[in-house]
Image: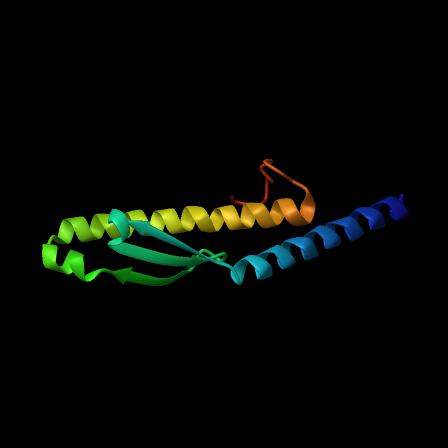
Length: 107
């Protein structure tokens, strides 16, 4: 009985190591998302961190605060969505869980 439990613990440790590796690899990758035809560009890494936001000079000329706010939100949301895709791809590559939702993983 103890031997079976030890095997389960060993497998759990291996899975945990795989997910740590996924997180580390995903953190090194970045994605870029744009909104407004490139008026706002956002760069996000695989840790769901926004690394930069660039706003074109063209939007400043518009002087439309609401438009700028909407474009920033749209670019950030698209960047975060692409970032989650990086993590899903890494999970599939490392574990073979293609298209399956893993209960303890939020994406």
